[in-house]
Image (tube, rainbow, N blue to C red):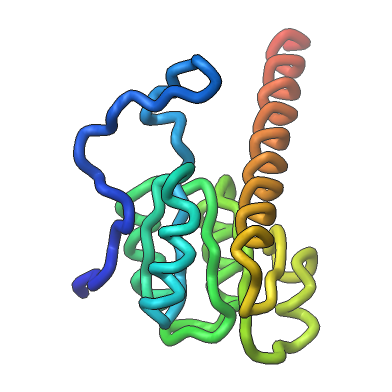
Length: 165
């Protein structure tokens, strides 16, 4: 299988990134996978987010799983209706095989309740398309912040547990 549209962000050597006078290491840049059948939607989402994040795209669930096997991602933004799998199967597989990867579901079509309910489908958030790009950015920021906080809680629990033993 060939990935037709893989990275929307140049993957050459990263220049130094300075935010508020602090240099950010390239590995500190979070990586997002946009999964949508429409290359236009992938391009718009990736262009919107690529100033802050390393963005990749895939046009099917199968391509998304191939990308996940090749790279580490912090977040997936996936359309509900895509070739290759059902959204429920895709979410279950991501949660089973890549538990540290958060998922935001987007859809332009009415979807069954169990898919659009982020809690029951193991997605962090659900956005209706078309969505304003500022709403997309806020959802991504909120999801990644929640994920970072979760990691910090897990790290503290691990340290507390190791000091008790």
